[in-house]
Image 1 (cartoon, rainbow, N blue to C red):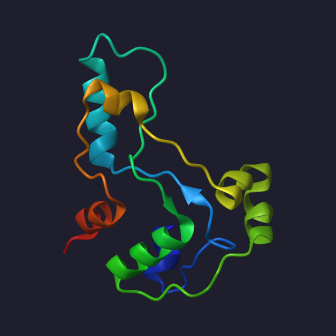
Image 2: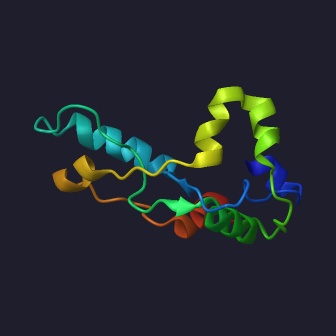
Length: 123
């Protein structure tokens, strides 16, 4: 998603109301290390931020952090052409929460998307 935004042609997908699950790389590594060292943490674990956002909010925040416009929406049919059935996750959205990690005591280093993106793109 980065390249179109850096080129100034980024935009929301479809209506932009679909939810997006995201996570900072520091928390991917941190959650994996945490899970390895927590013997009572068993089974599948959602490694994602505790705060999913709408595609519209993600688009606005990424464009703001990169100081680029984001006004060209991506039509769903274009994603269907590119990704086929896999496009459904992008078009319809997905919202997960890291319930097991939080209950086990994991503390996110970057729990909010705006802070996470600022961290990634700090100059």
